[in-house]
Image 1 (cartoon, rainbow, N blue to C red):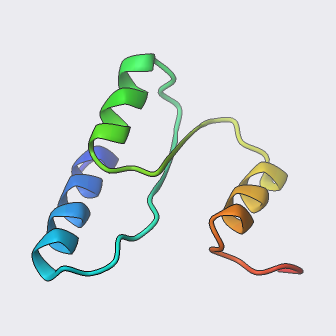
Image 2: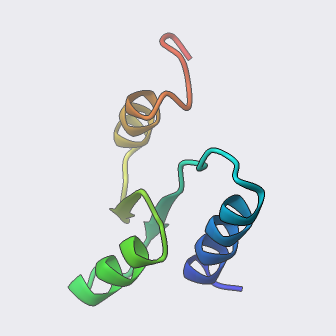
Length: 71
């Protein structure tokens, strides 16, 4: 199952169970505009293209409150 398919499945389950949406961050080597559009249409919240530094990843996770300060 691809990341796109996974995101669609997660969003479908969330809709069926009426739960709050999870934050889905795509980390990929595919940088075409069409890949980004497909990702967002599948319900992905953020599309990051490799290479990504640990500092960028940490900053993004803090922005989305996935990790706390000092982590």
